[in-house]
Length: 544
Image 1 (spheres, one colour):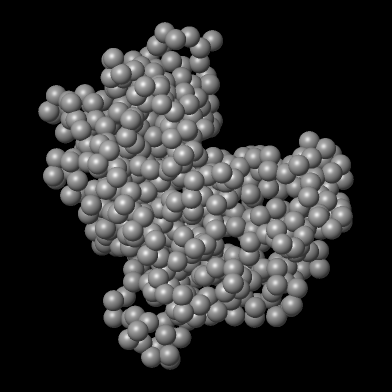
Image 2: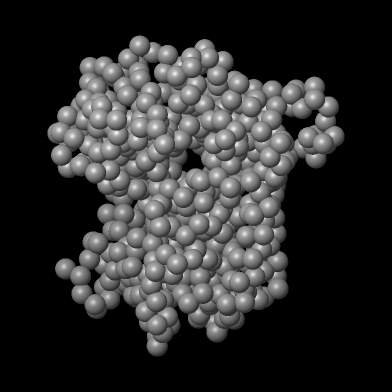
């Protein structure tokens, strides 16, 4: 039973035991802090613990979705595919956890429910659903940018007599779909992976598609001993280059190939080459101008859309439902999914695609036997799989009762205006240090381990500096936060991204303040600005 009396006193609490939480725990423990991580799940892994739906896999190359602080740790694990699936990823995270002996400092099935700052003592009181009451100096959030799933979005869900499954909490034992009528709601990256994987197994699959996606065909070769040795030999090269690219991937924009200087033939050749790489290179290393110039965005969008139309055999209905048009949005202003025979799944005789756009035939409600559409049609179903997204960036901490100075609620603050200082802290919340929250690349636009490693390392250096100087409290200043928000917004508003409704802008959550969640200045630029902040003595913060 939870009481107000602390059951444990710590120097730091880490929220979450995913990629960021594991590394943050390791670093703070190494610096001699009495630190513990609290994880809502039953084991480590974060997103790779919760999202175990069929088809879940990396869209970052496995050999760069890595920790680079220890060469032996990196090289002692061998990936079997370029883009491995969830089971292998989860095994890797167990390997990391056990090699670093982290389990003894993690509490599982202990969701952080509240965190209240005591101004008189300069410390946080944190409570978990498991009954823990923790008194701690630092509260470090490593809860992830896609860890607050959206639930109960449709009327009548309790009336449905079949099985409803969320991809974000998919049963570990799986779901039996053989000979069953299965509905999939959502065609973002997750829905795409579900459709392409499960369609051949179902009796019949109906896909309810609202916003069509530009997709790129994944090339996912097996990695044998020769290929594993080859990428491991690049350890030092990757360690030095990846943190300074635009997106935290190994590829980057080629300054020698710009839209303005290339001939039409060279443009087509470069688009074809990046597309055929079968990775996110088409998005993050083709032409940087796609983010700024509509005419160039349109040209690249047409290129990708044409690839999709060909694969759909120019079927008018499927093209209409599944291929974005220039009136919808431009390639790259949404998150670009990689897929493996996703479009071909719709050519199977047991698969139907229905457009449920708001101006067409949206879902009206769930009924006893299935889903009723606005035109009155009832699609009878046995199983409904919901791939309906997340409250990204701000969602994790907004679902915790976080209260700073004067009892101010972080949820209420972000409900009015989503602001942070470099995505590392928030005015009014001393000693709250954050990763994967808005206004940093880790909120969407980067290879996650690259950005999360950088943020946790920055936090560790800050804590180390404070301890060396006898300081116990740090808080962003109003001026520092204002300056960062202005800088962030000026970059975001120079792009085409804010013109598109997507989770990048918080548009998928009713009432959420509209602001580009992720810093678009580039991973390398963000790292440089964070380093400059530290070297200048943290002028955007006040320490005492």
